[in-house]
Length: 116
Image 1 (cartoon, rainbow, N blue to C red):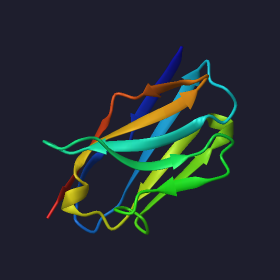
Image 2: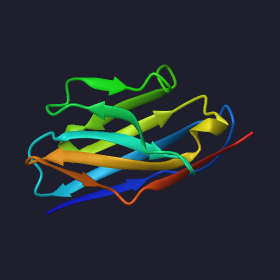
Image 3: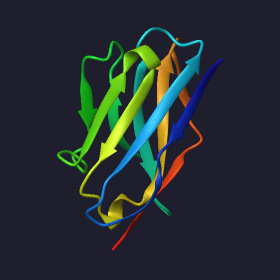
Image 4: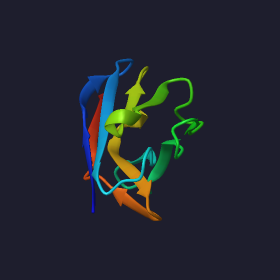
């Protein structure tokens, strides 16, 4: 079984920054693929960023490119999403995922609210 735990959400003013953390534990393969989706009220879940298995390549959505940076600590199986220049439209619940052993596991989500 794999556990995925996010932290770091909160309330921030537009233009501010937050850093989300995602820790994976349990039966994970070495350096699993990890990443983030988000879901705003009344909208579908939107992909934000992915770090591939092996940890060598990161991808980010066009909507956050240049503002959000995904990084990871492979020794800790932890991924970080550094979010800068936040906008009100970034307000959402952010969900971390881990792909390992052919299955995708989700965290419980962390709320990010950006006030204008």
